[in-house]
Length: 377
Ligand SMILES: NC(=O)N[C@@H](CC(=O)O)C(=O)O
Ligand SMILES: [Zn+2]
Ligand SMILES: [Zn+2]
Image (cartoon, rainbow, N blue to C red; front, side, top):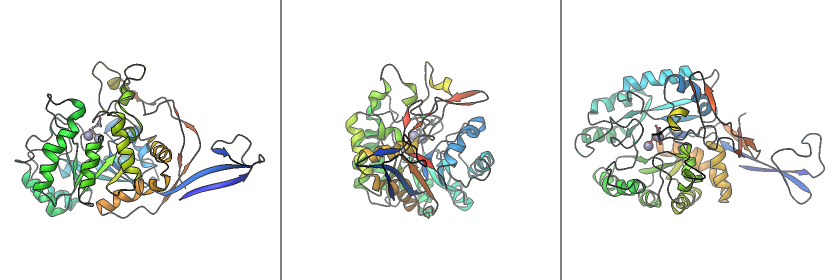
C-alpha cells in the first residue's frame, strides 16, 4: 500500500521546514511511505564464524525468512550439517529477532536419495542447491555429472517436492564469461526441465534477457527466478567506472544495459515467476580488494532501498510488494508473512564499511545516498 500524506505547506513544528523525505508539491509537501508485508530473501549467504555474526542482523531485522546458501567451507552437503548450521545461525541472531533461516543442501555427485529424505524429514531444509563445479565461490565440490550421478537424488527431490536452486552458468573456460548463463540455459536447463518436468526449479540471480525469456516460457509454479539488487540497478559499466570496482564484482557478472532493462521489465510487470533473492554475499574487504578478488556483493543493508528505487523509477511501486513478499512464498508453498514493514522516502547514507574484530566488509552503494529507508513496527 502506498501512503501519500499531504501536509500543509507551512512548515510545522512537527515536521520542520527541511524535513527529509518531503516532496514539495502545489501548496503541499508530500511525504511518501510504503507499507508492505514483510519481505523474505530467497537467496542469501550468511557465511559462518565471525562473518556470520557480523552480517546476520542486517538480514534478520528486515526479512522474515531467508533461503540460506550452503557454499560454506566445507559445504553443507548433509542434513546433519544443515541442522548444525541452522542452530549456529539462530545462536548468532540478536535477541528478540523473529527470523527463520530456511536451510539448503549442497548437491554433489554423491548426494543420495536417502539424504534427500532426511532433508525433508528434518523440517529445516527447504531446497537443494546446484553449483556446477567451479562456477562460483566455493563451488569446487559441486556437480560434475548432473544427468548421470545426480539422477537418483533429483528423482527423490521430485518425490519429496523439494526445489532445485540453480547457479546457472556453464564452467567451460572456452565460453565467454558474458555468455555462460545463456549457454547454460541451452545446454543444461532446457534438457533438465525436459527430462524432469515435475522438478521445481529456481534459476538464481538471473542476469540476461535470455534467462528472462526462458523463465517466462516455463510453467508458472514450476520454474521461477530470483533477482538481485545489483542486476536490477547496475550494468557492466559499473565494473569499470573510473577504475576497477571490485565491490560490484559478482557472479554471474553484470551484463550490458539491454539485459538490465529486460530484467527490470520482467520484475516490474508483476509476473509471479520472479521474486526477491538478494544474493547478499559478504567477503572480507582484503579478499575483494586483491590481485585476485572474490566474487560477491554484500547488499543486505541496502537491498530493500534499491529494489524500491528500481520499481519507483519504472513507475511500478504498486508491483513491489508482490515481488518482495508474495511471489516467493507462493512458489515455495509457504504462508505469506503477516507482519508489515514501512519503507520511507527518506534519504539515508550507506556506511562506507562495516567493521568487525579481524576485518571489514564494504556494502553495495557504500557512501552513497539512498531513499526508501526500511522501518519496522
Ligand atoms: N554471487 C557471487 O558472486 N558469489 C556468491 C556465490 C554465488 O551466489 O554464486 C558467494 O558465495 O560469494
Ligand atoms: Zn550463484
Ligand atoms: Zn549466491
